[in-house]
View (cartoon, rainbow, N blue to C red):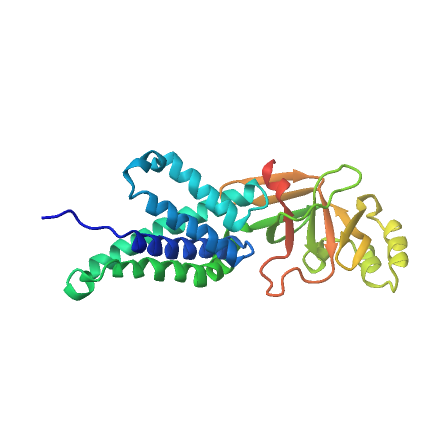
Length: 293
């Protein structure tokens, strides 16, 4: 019996196709902007690299470290991560999708073993891997953003002001860079509707019953909680050099699911509108609060 034949053109086409779809799905899941000509070039390089494995004098380029290095270069060129954290995320997604596609390919080939016609078609069973990657790219992003991420980034938060407390859902906001100008400590953002019952009546009236920002600030500085008042400077789209009303809380407790993190005398910024249209959370938590108790 002769040795089985391996065709370079089929090897290139199969690896190009799989690499393209895996890179595409990686970009979808990680939220990276898709630039198709970069994906095509990176996938073509992956196909050429796979063909090189067929050459006996190229084997030194196919050790495990070299394969990992080459895959990193493919990720960098195709997805162009902006920083180390984004590269780590795309790297994990890339290999995770690779392993799932490999499992789907093996399962698909096993299911087709009883069909002699299909098995006789070279690499037909690789369609299982392609379908798996397409499903991940199309449906995985939606599932990740709507189910997985909210569960990972939502925390129960309890706020204490004197003897009153309020409880709500907090969402980890890595883009929240607000800081108390007096202490330089991070600031939480809370919906006014969540915390208003913890405030004294004169403080509530100062927030709710004034027609101008200047009048509100004047009344707040004369309220019984003037010593808790903070003015937090911020910049946002459409508003430069704005001021956010903040109130110093006696204690904030964040339940991470494994342990409780306690912070004393942190400032809570007051937001009069809803933070989540669906009501999934009522607070925005800066990541620094979860890093140390």
